[in-house]
Image (cartoon, rainbow, N blue to C red; front, side, top):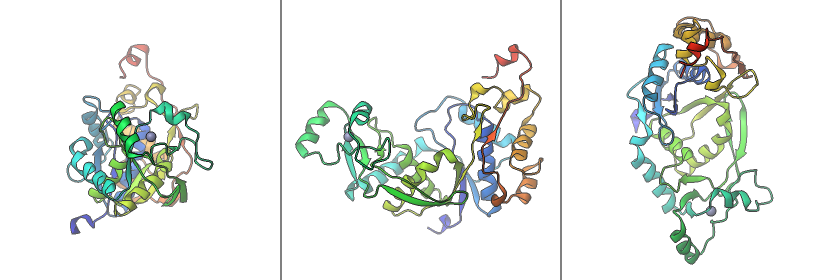
Length: 309
Ligand SMILES: [Zn+2]
């Protein structure tokens, strides 16, 4: 479809709470990658799983406050279940899906295949007989898993180069009827015409699964750029308990949204100020490849500290 030939990048937060500087930094990077290559920039709310009332509105407000703009309407995954169903039916009809009745416990306890990566699904339900399947359907609802015919897959990442990662029979549809993350992401990116995926490098290991699934569905594989995360002073992934890490908390320490944006831009070696100036200076090759260790400014006093949530 011609209207999808224009490229697009995206930011796709889960509406589970306020964005922190790590999320905002990834969003700014995704915007810079998209805008610097003439792409549209789209927002998608990944609310299949963890949605908290009011979180989406405050996330959108924070993204706008640091200067991001986006094209067309914001898309919500909960509005798109028919798209996911269609993809699942397509895979099932091609013989690429099977029912799995395993509990987490059973998967953890099952002996894994000799060369399987840690945590890979051991294939317990892959070859159940019709009778076994019928019997197990009486016990618990089935999840649907992909029947993968590879155990690894390689993607090209703009920052990491070729990256080969494990592919197992991952879940397509959870046993509570909710489409799985990997399926929804692949379907959405293609349906939205997204050909550039910029996100935190904690998701690099899921890119091979997603690219493989895209290939099975006959969908184009996007360009990937997995960017360094923001870590706390203990070198763990930044979290809200680390202190003044959201815009509302930073405001209490004297950093308004523009000040927070400037902290982020400086951490990327980019000029502070309006994002348009950063855009002119943006060069992916010059990005830091190490995580940014963020030490939040001190909150003024305990009274304020109690109000940051
Ligand atoms: Zn199973």
